[in-house]
Image (cartoon, rainbow over all chains, first blue to last red; front, side):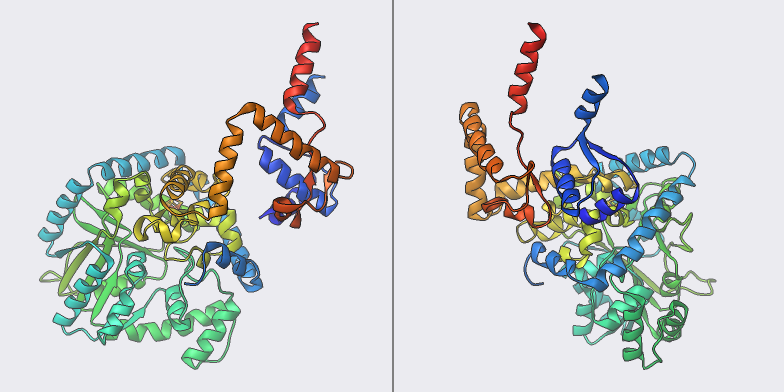
Length: 53
Length: 468
Ligand code: SF4
């Protein structure tokens, strides 16, 4: 399941992956790192925080 | 059926052929369904109304069943009530023996899979053949269906070619047209020879007692008209109130199942042959099957009885797409199966099924009747924990967690220890191989080390900074 998702994410060419679910974030970021991919992974709150600064 | 879901799923994950076959079909069906629904004007409203009429009907199911029975009898059919699968099989075999039936032609029917009527026929010395192409191949291969509408989604066409070459003594081919032609030649004979036809029902219309069947191969039409005895085996929940409701459900069913606007053949049967009719059976019987449905209706998962067996939730489910239908261990696979199977077979032997989901909600999103599958899965998980035996380690673990988590001080102290251990293991904030119970996690992915500061302390610090 993770493999299918990661392949789709990488194929999209996105620079950032944002989600509201901590479990999903931990899972997907861990998988991306294992693959050596350099996409930035954030919680929605982090993204908002960054935009507000 | 050996082992539990987890073991079967593990085996399925290692099966390369299965992955090729599943990926080919499910991905295609997801796209077709989306396009199909997009072609329906006001699809959301049609879904809402379909749902409302189903829920209303379930609410007064007993009355609807009585009305349906009365219409059937007026139409000249005989009605039988079967409380269990065994009752249904006994009734059907009895009808067959009384009428001197030697050969039965079946059109695809989930209810008959549920009761395993084929075995009952065979034990009574009555021949039976499946006439749906997929089911026919399953029968030839001695296999089991793995999808509600695509019984052989787990097989590649190369595998089908080998089965046919072996069982029908025809030259091997992996061309689907040729394979369909082989089956067609065989099945024509079967239709003509059968003296009893057996089908399920996609819908039963309460207002006029019509039985509605949809197929893409036209086989249901043959099965309902050619043999001299015709039997319908249907679950008691398959009713719709009126023909106008039927119209809505047909639009949704075809689109959700295959993306078609309408299934190629829609057959409505309203009784046996009348004087003056050119064709049709001499007798028609309708067997109404409960088999646990009344129990489901009285419980937390009553909603699932609104399911029209379109299979969309299977195709959308990331778990189904990874492990296929056989892993679910019974007739109904996928998200819908994880609710129906414990309902009709009992939760204890299938207590793992409700947990075979990430609760992502893809099933609820595609369900034409908008069944809240994740909610029902959670309700069943709850029930499984309360009422069935869980492994001792899990029980103790949860108890311990509940203790710790309900005492804030203790919880903070415990997480501080875990945080320190994990951080000591990390390099650049990441752990490649975690110790003990966490090692399962790092088999497939890295684990992020906890932050130096918890969210709680960071929040306090920042709040303090802002006020000062
Ligand atoms: S639960 Fe919904 S999506 Fe799944 S098979 Fe039934 S009707 Fe289709």
